[in-house]
Image (cartoon, rainbow, N blue to C red; front, side, top):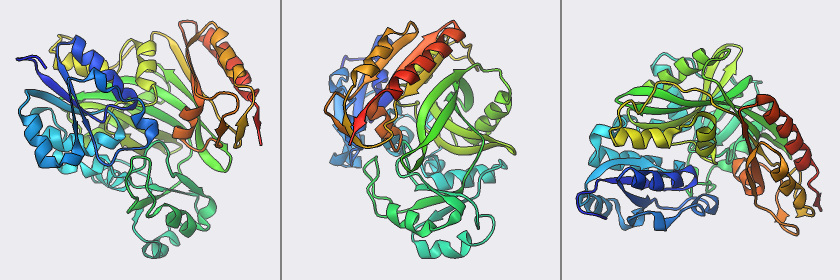
Length: 418
């Protein structure tokens, strides 16, 4: 670290968080990494590039020791790089850079899926019926009465990430088994599930509104539509992400709702990744993630709009004039096609996925399996990204649509033998 250089601390610089360090260094900041404890699943930590950082600290040394070490630096800001770092980043920011910190009193609500819904309801926003459960017995009287009785339910860890453990309970039947299966289990971010959340299932079209907040003002960096499919007994497997223009049918209502949700949850500074279902009754929150969008979405957003939450953060910290517009312009049509394994088994012809590279609009291809690899059926976002994905982008929307159909056809030819 150079004398006189301001430091930006990234807690758990995994997933899209790996993009912070190079951007910060180009802007004249010293990037420093903090790794939380316990560490999340290897699928997250594998992306970590320790060589990109001027210093690295581990939370296992204790919070007081960590604060003493970081307090010796000229800390400009503290940001989470991945979901596992959200709570620790909130705590460190409140101590080291309080002028660029989210409301510390609402820190648990920005991570806990049940408290999140409560905060929105107190703010007067419509929410989906939600119940937080620590033991199946305490839930029985509530789940057998309105508004839950006889409804499709979704059960997930209170600190869920990447659809890990998200379970559909059709008609509310046998919800006890779903709750029991998650309680006490270690989740993808390395924590034991002490609580699970039970919600009425939302139906409609699922969107993502990615934002960057400063001074309590929430700017929109990009807007996407998800397509999820049922696969191998799992009901919400990611298949496609499509980047959309800011102005579109229902988009204004979505954005207004998300900005209200961010206010309710005390967001003041930094990126957020908010998932919303546009139902027949209007927008309903699925969850807010107090960090930049993961799984390559930040890089895809830069292709779609020329910007993303990381770039806006760094420009704001650098004091670049006019750095943060309220909205965005869609420069290219961008689609992300994720590969889905319909069954477990052995990969027999991975070369068909590599053929996607020949498509004119293919801007990126990640094939993470080889012939002979044994894989599980795709069940959540982590297992989907473990198989791979294709990034398609062009100013010609029709060309992207054509190549997307072809990419799907290549992926459907993948043979997985028992």
